[in-house]
Image 1 (cartoon, rainbow, N blue to C red):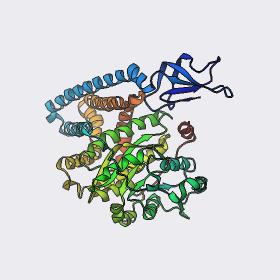
Image 2: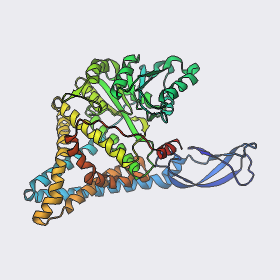
Image 3: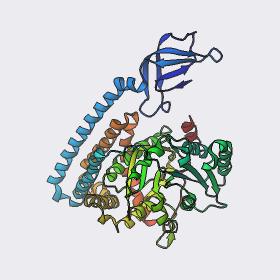
Image 4: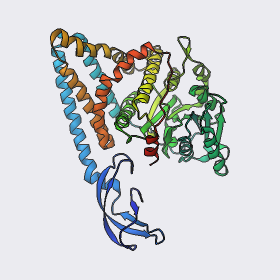
Length: 502
């Protein structure tokens, strides 16, 4: 009937009394417990409660589930992952040694490969040095959470409750929902939540509705102008904060030089299908490795929308310019988070706080996924060009890394065409070493995920890397040619809803 770290509630097939001992055998299926708990369990337990009316019996485990799994499962995962990381690094070293030896035979491909390996390995190296900001006793600035909403009636109630049910002083927390002209019942649901909890929350929950759709950026700006808190926290309407997310995300702002902080984003509907499983691995690596590496230098290049916090005085300084931003004479209708981060980085630091966690819904169909990725690539290209103007003023190694991170993806389609089409056709040389390099880097990513998450999902990182190489990579070209388009199309499917709510 229910399960937790310390016990289980079930309906037994025979009478039991308080104090009885038993051995429970069960399988923790995906989504029952946090990721990494999926396993067969055989655990001694004791009856601590019997409800004669319902027939439910409460068991207390002899040991917490996490302690049991660490002894039976997780330590083997950690050992295997460390061995996998070592073998991947040895393999990469061997391949790149060959690249240096044959460098002058195919300079473009080998030079690109060496630069790519240097860039990626440096991300993993600096991520290993990263440590989240610790909680400073007594540091609790006032916070306003702004939730922009458009046609999210399925999720908005859960999002609101996640924002209000925080381990944070109530008098220092307010929530503003800005509906961007939804055509469904989002406004009605949000107002019903407000009315239901008004006696408890009072004016801490505000619902503001636009009469017509104006765009997410305008909704965020409207919420920021209404905010009273010292810090403004943007949370997407299909993202759900962990109970201690606010407490953790505010900690970096103890440093007055910090203007923005991003939290960690996990995939809520990760178990839906292969696509969402691949995204779960990609999201975690993107945050824990790439954003963590950038945070070492206080230059996180994108404070991601699901959980991004800003110092209000800094945010208001750039709010008008950000809201009215144009690109090549056209309104900038997406890439809000990366654009705002660029404004912040012009005068302050932007960091990553790994312990501040939210879960978000990701696309579960390839059509919506491709639309989302195209939108992200267009905004990445646009905002990276903006960042080029000031990034050279940052820490030298970070600056070099940033420019490499811009050049390598743009050049990738040309290099891949040369390796996979030109070289085989002209010289009969197949890109075996290139594919081996991609495989080894994907193994490095996957084993890092296994080490940190101890989850069966780690294997999905390998197909994602090849999926990126043969499919997503080519969106860069199309993004350059269609920068003016602004489709969104990332709403969740009905199956996602049942998986996430279950």
